[in-house]
Length: 104
Image (cartoon, one colour):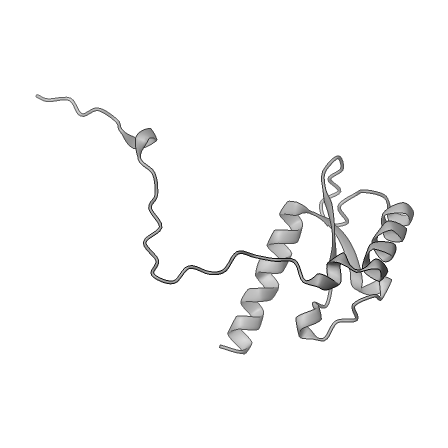
């Protein structure tokens, strides 16, 4: 009986999509002086702690509870939650999925 050699670790995924999505870019709003000032104030008052999972020692993102694309207030501290990268990605993906279901 022949034995098969495991080659799983040497295989890689090939992207076969015809149309690739453009690279993600941060909206210029997030580079503005008012946003940076607000974030500095929030980080000072709330600390560098994820307000969802409590994680520290990582990059913290300012995330709009009610997203700008959905009409959220851009510079309202009550509309901003501080999140780690994992929680930010999860929250953004969930909001995007809801938006896509509502506006296909």
